[in-house]
Length: 500
Image (cartoon, rainbow, N blue to C red):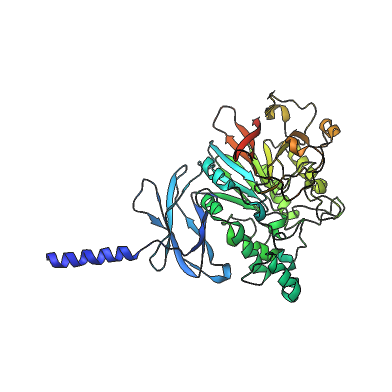
């Protein structure tokens, strides 16, 4: 081949390489899902209809591998899950989005989980309640810096009925004066003037660049609660729940839901730990209904699924995620209706679950929840005497050897909101096994109800759970963190350790 031809070919290759540039076609950064069976879904969301695939590789690997091409359409808000396969455990991967026109995104990175079915170590951060109005503090950066195995968002990832109530959209559309007043107040900003469009708009507003940086590198686990489901203390009668489910799936990765067209509950495993994620909204009875056999939080099918899976699980620890707390002090009555929104208002079904756990001698069950708006930990289904292994002013250790089939309930929230007090602690309940035994609640959550004003300090709260089944004594350590407003740092306020 002549030197002239070689030169021409090199120029063509250079021009081709230069034409492939980084693209800004992503509406926001990808969202890494839960890694299972050596594969992971990554949610892609683009500005317009397009064709995409993902190139991915280990940090020490070259060249990369590719997913199948996926066409994104307006029907699903230009979103889709692309599946990365044949992944190794405990391994860092780089990935980027390639577009049909030859352009691509920047590189992102994530790390896979410990091998399934084998003893291991991992950790996760859990919290809830991302009120857009109070998002001044960059909590997502703090979470990203701590490098958890995954992040569990336990509901109220946005507030559909606050900061512009999409449930009043019909009123907004049909009354000129109300519409103008709401626009002037900044309450309603819509491109697509439908309830579906309003749900989409809400997520677009709350998932800022700090959130995007976190979820593009740390696997995300999510479930909804009442406000992102649609309405304060909402239940199975909520009229827009199908729209809510559709948009939830457009904004979070595929979690291999147990049912396709029903509630969004699912299961996954990390190391030798089984994890169950509950939907406490889709099937639930209204909270004002009389508590009893006919009142349900989970619905018959989800309840049966949970009980069978717990019974069949061989895991040392069974982690259950619930968007509402299971203890006797976290019930929300803010809608003005009778009853409690948490498991306090569904004690017949809660007791059915706890009795099943006791009858079948199921050990190591731990519930993690949001919505309570203060960090706390409780022991359910306990028997007297209730002995701890050791205790300090800021920590306590328990052993299932002493507790038997008792169930722990840990609650941590909010990520972006104001402090609240929940219900006052009833000291007599601390001696009564029929009630939740309260291990910890911060002092600011103890006093009488606080009246809020616009100047009150906004808080951030989350919990960190560290699971170790490799050590000779398997254990779970849960630490609660709260924002110190003076130093803008997250400070550990209490620690609970439970050994198996």
